[in-house]
Image 1: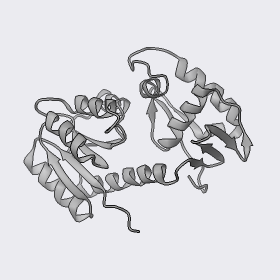
Image 2: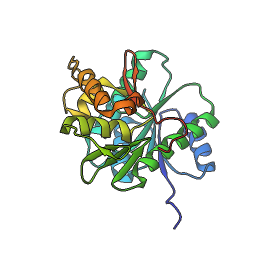
Image 3: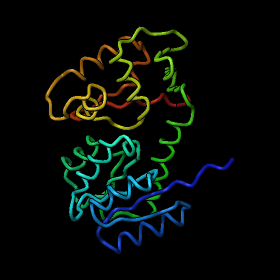
Length: 235
């Protein structure tokens, strides 16, 4: 059976940019719709349930940050992938977007070909993450989501519930940097502005329990963590 065609929602208040992005994504084989305001974007996301949203940060009625925050807070839309478009090159804006759960970002002006490639890369990760039902393999790590167990090279580990949830979050978003604030929000369900070393301490203990496989959890200085599969191993 052929895979369903991915639906992409393009959100921008500049008609020329919308037309350009819609054209190239449609040409690449995606089903594309658009919205031009923040509230319209949220409504479309809830109604259409796209696979991915190309989201501009500067929008009338509601900022892209607020749109992203609402999407991630709703159980029906929180799994939608998001590629941010921003005219701002300031690092705090990129960090804020990624902390709120964006999957990637692209700075204006951008190449339409690069945008299509970024979309394709995000969708590959999304599809890979949900392809196998309960079993998730990242290098030597095997996570059974149904049994809530973790094994490294077929050796079952004794993880706490929080350590398991932390590892699962990193594994499901492997290859992508996860901000400490985002991990606090998703694993501990804490407000993202809480200043704490809770994440760092749990990562340290998790690395220790994983043994050599713990080296796959990379520290991204000043931001957070990323789980990267070893080269040459399936992920």
